[in-house]
Amino acid sequence: QFEEVSARLSVDGTEATLQLLADMLQRDKKFHELFDVRRMQCRQRLGLSVGSDADLDELDEPLRVQLENGYLDGCREVGQLLLRGANVFKGYIGAENANEGVFQDGWLCTGDLAHFDDQGIYSIDGRIKNVVISGGENIYPEEITEVINRHSRVVESCCFGVEHPEWGEILVAAVVVSPGFSETEINNWIEGQLSHYKIPRRWIEVEALPRGPSGKTLVPELKKNYLERNR
Image 1 (cartoon, rainbow, N blue to C red):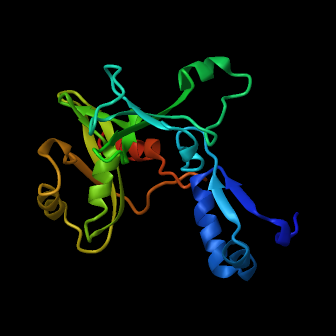
Image 2: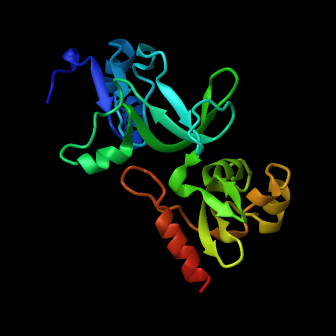
């Protein structure tokens, strides 16, 4: 409990919290007054795998991209995103072994894949653990999902990899569709958007994407769904 008049700062730790606050602002005049009239700040203070933009200006170099060969400065090359700053958590309490794998010389190894352009603007390409290696090519499922979601017949989607005897892995797209969806049509459409090796080899239609409490898509459940359909 607190007196609303004294509230000046809200700090959240999950992606879903921001949507919750947005919903409250729309339906509750009290919350609207806190954030709009009284200028209450809302900040994210996250650990792994997301860092907020809070306090990034305090450091000359708050972000880095580390490539597989160890170099840290490859413009437009994809590598692991490293973070440091006051907005990054200090480590896991009583779990030194875990900290050793997460921190590197004061940098937080996010597990996110990213690149930056010649203007120093960073873009997230995906997660290391989600990379699909098909026929020797690296495919970032998040990139493909973003493209598929632009199609007019797709409500939402999620891409993931499954093992394949010939290719090592193949990319599968789970889609929630609207009436009139055609796999042939979207395959023809997506060929103009992506390189051939990035096009999903398999499609499955689902009524809804399974989500956890934080709002993230439960990819293991989608993989299970696909495997059950293709025994």
